[in-house]
Image (cartoon, rainbow, N blue to C red; front, side, top):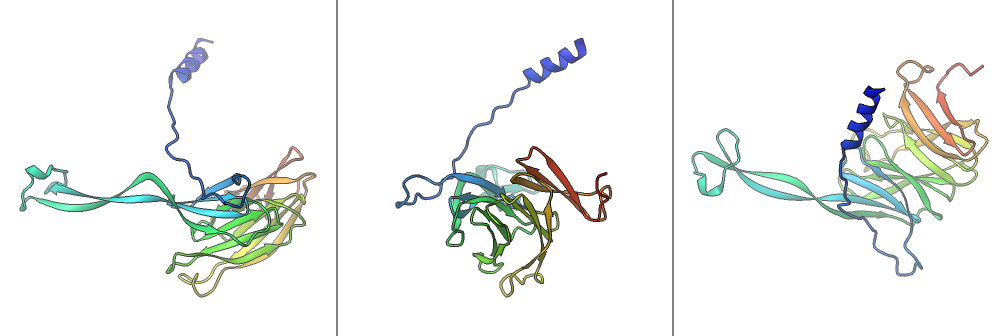
Length: 254
């Protein structure tokens, strides 16, 4: 009808332009025949860090900051320096981000095959990396040193691990791979500020079988009291052309 045609016309006339403002590329390996593929990336919860995986390594990127001094009058408005006076204006320092990104950490020498997925925990101080060597690396950043260190390497999958994700509280970690299984790990967090003295501990609490093909991707979602007894549900996407929803203590499908 005419209303639908008008809506389609409005949608076609609304345009937005996106442009590439930067390209993040790790330093090339002189011994490599070609540059490693960038398989996956993940934002930290605060949006200040970006993790990416290339080949067997993981890179942590940070957007550069620049500080600017501005003069404000008594009402808080910015004034030009030539119009300012010592009695009615004051100088403040503001921090802004530019479009330059720098690699602040290279996480290497742990995985033996390519890393296909990375995910920050909700706290932003823990990073999980899923690798085709069948393991999941756990990297923690010390609150004092700000250095990333591999504190655990989770084993159990029979073959390549393809994806990894956290629940909203960071207490559960889900992994999946070519073995058609989904593993759920419980993350026991240390006391506040304890990342430097004691790492997190992980324990497998469930192995989920139900897919007939490789499990490619995972994502947690809030249960909202609609599925099972837990606070989260987990969705898994597989090469068997299905997406399965997993819930704690839920009634099975009939």
